[in-house]
Length: 348
Image (cartoon, rainbow, N blue to C red; front, side, top):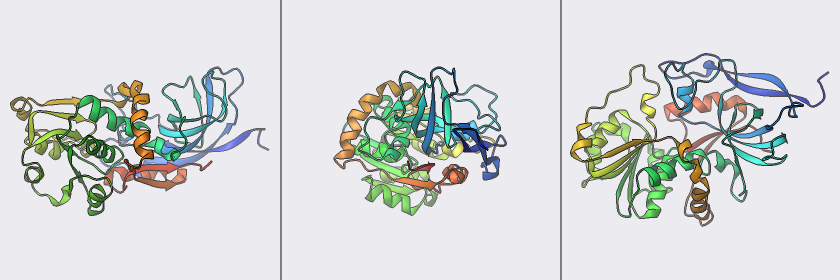
């Protein structure tokens, strides 16, 4: 007979570290453990969470590697649940800042229930007039990433020419909409006709193209930006970055958010056109969203009215059930998802 208050806890664990190449579902395992639905006696500053929604994010690929060099995030622990951003409900708390019934977003475990001791970097959700799933993306890490990279790193001005790669993803779709609201000209690239149509017809991009149908990316960019690019929001790397460098305007800015084309490479591709950074006086800056979370209240002040006025739209790709999480995560790297990929663990 189960102990009082002890329940089954389904978890997604990492079985093997994955070096080069695409990760496989078999590199992860869905298993059951058990957990007491109460913070253990004597444990201070802890919260017990019931996870509702989990976010699938490209940066998690790096954590599936055995990282020998320092990174801004550590490798996942073999045999333990993956960790990532999610939305959860507080079931029990010995932490002064959290009480039973609070809804939070932040880093949690890929499992039904998580015990988090000394939680750091969790955000209490105050505005529940919008779908809670938005806090896995639009109102969570992806939204802050779009906001920080575009506004804080690039300092955009009305009328500038903006290019966004991987533009239909969780971050790209927002960068494009922020740019349009500011009065910029915006072009996005994506990997299918469906995604290109989405960029033009739903997200309001001025133009979009399928990079898979462009044998010469430099020529494609010259077609859409005959006068050059002021701001490039970089999500892809590799050949796309090389082509963009040839098309930047003087004093252009590049926010380096991600390089998804390189995450599964045994030998990352080199970049050949860096001389353009000198000739065009381009500022190219990498950034990590965690450095900007102090601006989260300012971000909400801007974006929540836009959502309620229907000026920002957001597309989600929702997988049902924790057992679907490994396939959902891997799908990011083959472009299977359309919009923000998330996993529903529980609807209540």
